[in-house]
Structures are given as structure tokens and as C-alpha cells.
Length: 160
Image 1 (cartoon, rainbow, N blue to C red):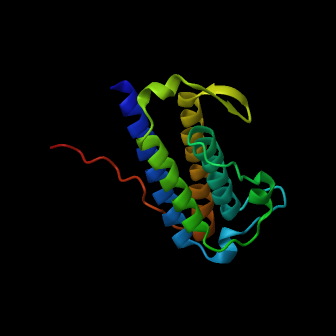
Image 2: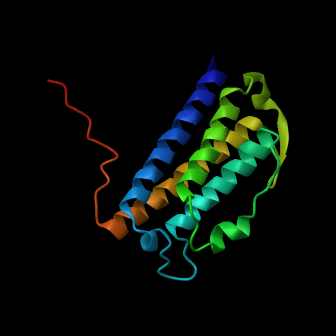
């Protein structure tokens, strides 16, 4: 039961954060998506590519057994990529399919990652946390670039 809850919550978070990123991208022009105010900063577009690469590598390849085709340096050097949102949505959709079909008893299985051996549970936890971290950066950048309140969080209704 706990394993199923963990997997379900993980896929819910990836879905929610992807929707937030989609909303952010819809508020920005292509120039804003690829804007870097300093050469050491990442653009929103680079962060989206980075998330796609991370999810594809850690869930798609490490857990799902798909080929590892990640080019991490390219994620941060790109300055215009067509179908940016489609790439993210496709990658997250494939990862969710892997997680939805993952037998819960595999969560304790050890796998090799770029950071050493980890349990599959740790891999999923790392990916979801990483995804949320960069989604927060994308939201912050979008607010700065657009000047808009994105209204992702409505205040809780008070009971009377």
C-alpha cells in the first residue's frame, strides 16, 4: 500500500509540475524563454531541456531500460529548440508510464546511476525533487519576465 502511494504521488507531482511549466511557457515569448541576463545563468528553455534530459536518463534509462541518449552539455548550451514543450510532455508521459507499470517490489532494487548505486525508490525521489526545484526556478523566472502572478496557489477557503 505504501509503495503504491509513493508511486502515485510521484506521478501526480510530475504531472502537476509539467502543467506549471506549460503555463509558464505560454506566458513567455521565445526571446524570454531563451533569455539569459548573464552568461552563467540558465534560461527557462535550458531548464526545460535539462529536466527532460534528467527524467529521460534517470527514469527512462535507469529504471525503464531505454537507451541513455542524454547530452547534458547540450541542455545548457542550446539557445532555441523547436517543440520544447512537446519534448518535455513526451518525456514525462513516458516516465509516468514506466512508474505506473513498476512493480512495487522493485523499489528496493539497486541500480547504477551517474551518482553511484541507488535504490529505485531513491532514483524516483531524486527525480521528483529535482523536477520540483527547477520548476520553482521556472516559475520565479516567469514572474520576473512577465510581471504576472501565475495564480497557481489559491488561498484555502475558510469554513464558516
